[in-house]
Length: 526
Ligand code: F6P
Image (cartoon, rainbow, N blue to C red; front, side, top):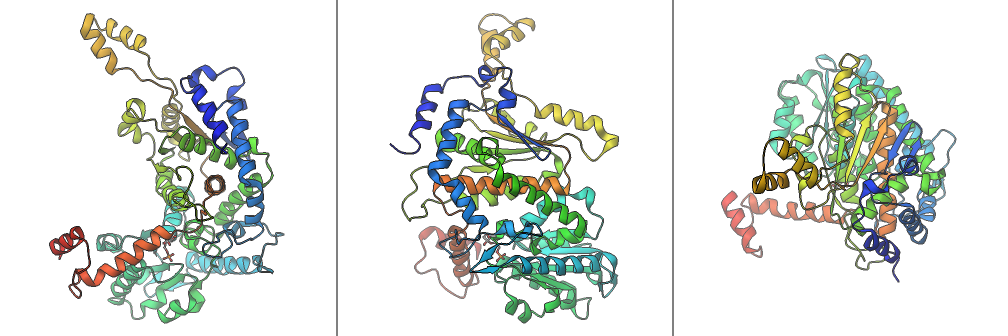
């Protein structure tokens, strides 16, 4: 019997049961978790008490608690790259000790954080200036984890941003950097080249373009460049003063790196104190993850809801729908976090994965999504589990009535039965076959699972909680699936293939050996 058998049995037994029928007086409380001011409600799913017990059993047979302890202790759980996985160290408390190869890594984490904070303060106060004076704009050039984290968080924390404006360039498409730099003053712009390896072709190409743009107006453009990288030799060769190079260790994966120097642009925008609050939120979620019993553990239950929907019910995608405009980049951020981490076909031991890997993650902020793709969610033939995020209050106290409207759109569960649709059509005066035909178009089968993550207000602390919550969710799902969530060999292959095609596209090499489609496309594009 596989570890999935009991869950599959429960699913088969209850497949046709209605979620609404599960509700009694206590379900909303029993199937939700509160922690540090947040509420995670998973009562609008088909999970009942027996299913939850079986799901928690799955964590036990998969060794989630043991692996969690190993991760927090600095064990090299990323074993295809021989690395520890220690993004939690970037937000650890002052009295924590985490050792890698027998050395406590936290003193260095704290030292680098304080150099980042000192630089951020200098930029914000004007102590660090560009050739034309005080820094007005910061351009972060990076891609993937060196872009999505700070870009997502900068938008999310807009009400707290009181420093220079920040901009983010990631795509190697020249349109991106062109449009971002247009309108900026090179003499008051700071460029941060954020690249763990300092070799990523998109980032280095954009950095070169930014240097040329700045060089047209600024005598020494490198003086207005900073770098975030683990490759100090390469940043030095690029001409960036080591004083403005902020390093981090190889045990921080790109998509988990916003908590450290990769978050420098965010720190400059909101200030080191607000950034500390962001870290504190992440730390609060870490503490909760480590201490709460699994049935009351938000990341664990969020992961188990995900496993239930994807691996057991077979729902291939999940929609992340923030009813919080400032989380508009959260779906994109989670796409990388979840799909780069758990989109793997091989288990840690090298065997084929026994089940589906992680789901396709997608989404848009509500209510925009409602007027676009919710039609499919409501009436399409495939079930898409939805994950809503919503704040009790917005930041715009003068627009509280709009927030009310926003929230009222988020909290919907019911569908519409054929009988109800018939009654509506009858009221409109329709009869017979036409009444039946029109009514059928207006039926919403309902029974579509969703969860809600609710919080008081989107502050730096809460954003930290949310991001750490999803990180740990990925961890738990990865352990249950038997995946190494911390490598990304598929992306590495993409980098290699793109590199090999460059001379071909530039006309410096032929297409011999390329498949027919690639050869024809090269011929067309060349
Ligand atoms: O997308 C793959 C990846 O390796 C990410 O993990 C990383 O965040 C991104 O590329 C960029 O890499 P780097 O920070 O080295 O430029």
